[in-house]
Image 1 (cartoon, one colour):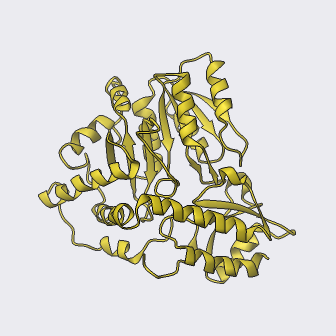
Image 2 (cartoon, helix red, strand yellow):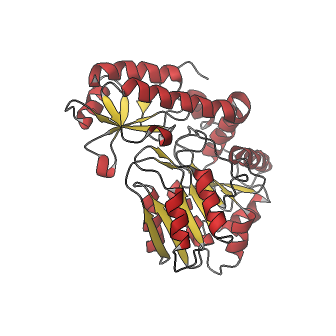
Image 3 (cartoon, helix red, strand yellow):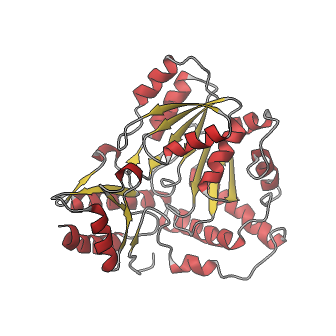
Length: 360
């Protein structure tokens, strides 16, 4: 990895290596050309490897929110259960309601993980069939990493035909995620967080079950129609004009992630950065999440001793370091440290040395 130290520690968009930015300046090619199709074919194979799936994977020029909407349009004929534990998990609910989908909410306190037993109890006491359940793997607003494997298993144990829709926006490329082994049905991630690209693309894995569900829906919209994505993927392209510079960058980055660093070492590096952050900030800050469920990609910290969280962020900015402010309900009481993507342990250590002076 490049020996350049990052000074950018927001929880996405994250720091981007110069080599990746350089890929975005390559000469333009036609998105229906043989050259692009060859690249896109290899790109989709690497995206499958990223999700650890043998099923279906697509690359879409969109924010992650677009694919949240797409997953609901394609996979929910009538009713969805939305599990929430922060601001971004609640986005599923907002989208479902705006689409006119019947949505129930299983709400958890901010900073607390989604409870598998509460999920199981909800299914056992439900009055409705759910076409799908939404799960947010990593809640970026609070720094909670949910036990996605266990939660998905609960859904399968309680309802054989309910689909599992997953927001992995700030976990993919940072935390272990095994699409096939965990029997997920739709899992999406924007590329500006754990994958360390500029914003603009979303990658998504889709199961055979989800495609079968989509095929039974007469109205799936246009831009996020899974059947259209699948049909065009078989022709080595996307349905509509993609951001070709982003595709260049993603192809280069996946080469690095999968074959240079490897997923296992990348996951391990993120665990080291999480542990280092919690250890170093413990003297002057309280983590907003219990250690067992602390995110490997973003930490929310509440300053001790009457210090103001916004003042900490402002003071760090004056010293050249950009941290994340608290989000939503926690805006005034916490700050967030993004330690994801291609940020190195050395970069994080250098930033924490400065934070010791500012917040200590």
